[in-house]
Length: 171
Image (tube, rainbow, N blue to C red):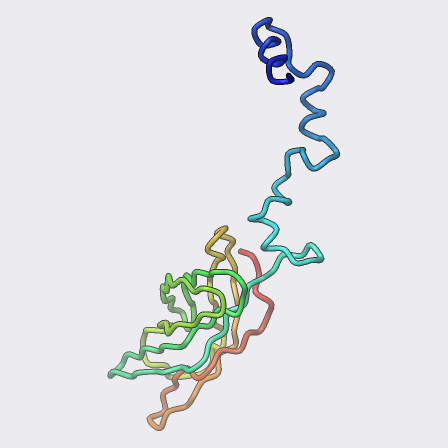
């Protein structure tokens, strides 16, 4: 009966919902109103129960360096310690950056190149940066690490370990 009444109003050129304003529809107190961005399912999954943004974590282990004359390349296993799929974008250390562009599912790990450059002759610079993002929403983060070096028998240094120094932050 309601359907035919609505069709009759349309044919007669009368409004279908008399007495209900557009703002009443949009901001209804019930669950039928339009949800804001904060309530959408894609945003809720990136916020904890206290309403704080969940910052994903990445750790590195099992470093391997290969010295070839005056050049060295170092690989490490990157571990996604977060509940989100991440894309590791690049590392920066010792004045060089290494593009990675590797996606990791939650709790997944993969071997990535973290450094390719000249042989390391001193251990003065202990800062490493990892740029990464949550794949689903492209939210970018920067993690800072303290670099632990290993002194080789020939007097050069290789990368031994990364220790996270600060909570990763939005960039």
